[in-house]
Image (cartoon, rainbow, N blue to C red; front, side, top):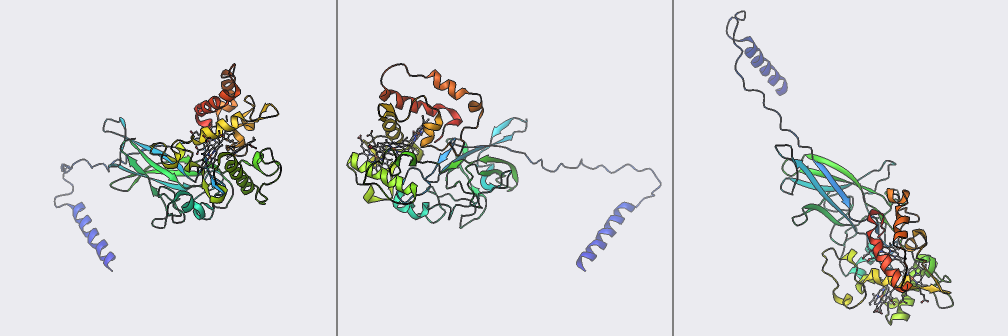
Length: 375
Ligand code: HEC
Ligand code: HEC
Ligand code: HEC
């Protein structure tokens, strides 16, 4: 009834206006009206965003020791245009930025992590923190795991870097059907800080792999675990990890096997776990840095007078013995298909000194191989 009444009233007013009060046949000047005001132009933002590493590794299981937790970092900037059309980088006074899960072309989507990893069973023992299920080490959640707000998760603005960052998203390489997908997508959205209107989106790959495998050499009866006294655990990953702790204890007078789960980075500084960049602290002080200790030690290893990691072998036989690659296929870019990696390696061919000096230097310089580098 009310609506009907309103419509009738509206009609009366409209008719009244249209009818005018003068002689309709006489020529009258059209009333002067202001030009219609334009609806506010929705500024379309350009979102730029990227994962900070070529490939983030995480352990497949955490009960014995951990090299890396689930911890991806995405940084984003939002470009707007000023009144002259010039682009500028917007800050958090103008825009808010969020990350959420989105499906890839094959329909694979990764919205949650709870139940996809045993990280939360061991996180407290490993990292000395009390994490509720689903919460990453810096407090971030996968969008469907956040008990407060399920859905888009805010990214924090850094005045210093002039970008929005989500540092430590606990994403895993299992999609929501529990199928392995090391290249899940997150949608990064820029939203007007005042109106809440979405200004722009970008879908980015947030690569993560559990293909950090030491089994080839450390499972029982393999090269680094020959003879008696090795683990008989039937899970080859756990078996290999226990064997590694035994070796470490034997060689370095530690008691790691008795203090599982062990965080290697407790004693060997890892820049991957030190976002603030404060450097070695606590037990790490005076001990070799993690990547050095791994690369140098393994790079020098010889068996029957031959290097265990032959310097001229392809990456599949060397780096990818420990880093994700052979299954995950990290190298899919132009450098690989164009053969640049092979050329780069030849260009750095070793011509003197001992293999001992060579291996670590070469491996460290490997970190300059741009986005092809696995970490
Ligand atoms: C290609 C073979 C190979 C791979 C792959 C490999 N290792 Fe080793 N590793 C060895 C050999 C050989 C030794 C020496 C065994 C010995 O001393 O009897 C060793 C020794 C070690 C030691 C003992 C160091 C010491 O102080 O003596 C640790 C710790 C270790 N490896 C960790 C790892 C981890 C962690 C991984 C996977 C991320 C890994 N290794 C992958 C071959 C390998
Ligand atoms: C409680 C401290 C501690 C923890 C935890 C620890 N390490 Fe070590 N590690 C040491 C010490 C001490 C050495 C001997 C360093 C030296 O000789 O300068 C060492 C040596 C090594 C070496 C051999 C270096 C060489 O050149 O001989 C490797 C490889 C290694 N650690 C890997 C690991 C891995 C992998 C983990 C996790 C499973 C780990 N460490 C956890 C203390 C630790
Ligand atoms: C024996 C196992 C093993 C092999 C072989 C290996 N890595 Fe690593 N790598 C590791 C571990 C463990 C880390 C430490 C991750 C961390 O710092 O938390 C690491 C770290 C790195 C990092 C990060 C550097 C940093 O300072 O954190 C780069 C880059 C890297 N590796 C490149 C390579 C390249 C390139 C090769 C082949 C030439 C290679 N690795 C071979 C085990 C290995």
